[in-house]
Image (spheres, rainbow, N blue to C red):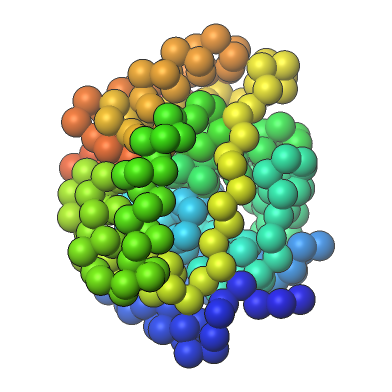
Length: 289
């Protein structure tokens, strides 16, 4: 299989940033390698093994350490399993899965089964939301509840806005290597400046073969079949997956929708204050259940 990395040097630079982010989190953790039909899956395990399990899923062009930072604080109340999604710039296999079939759902349930997780909570951001919804489509056994932040797969934004505000700056960076284009890209998507994201994406854009397949949206009939409680946290100023549009459609298609929250000041990627708010929401839900 041809590598998704354009060079070994580029791969090393990206994985060094992965290791640096994990080190900067200053947490106790262990790696767990899970073999699946789609290839090796890397999982970072942290928190208290006597506590209930929660599995967290990062977004596109991301990695497990980013998810651990996003959901920081859960490790005090859960045993946290942060998964490296396949075919992303991280430590899992480079097998490209399809968003049009059951691949992601099959894969995530394989991971859950191999880890022997029961009564599991799932939390994911952006593309991680698609992965989780695909898992619920496939089967909802062993999954207690899910929390989705700005998830893909519910609605899509205006493709022309995305083209001019996101994809063109990215392409200009790839051509010129001028960091201001990465900053312009991130300014459209991030609620606050993120120095690590600038470092990581400046490497990913140059050295990793990204997937530009259009993100589908979940079929109403399929959404109606999901029984697991779902909480959706949407972002009002989300260019990729507009918050008000998302909440409106979610209310129509998910009979198991437990709660929706609209982050009034947020772009696609939340700021640290909103991340803390989301963690508190998960903890409150757990404590009252």
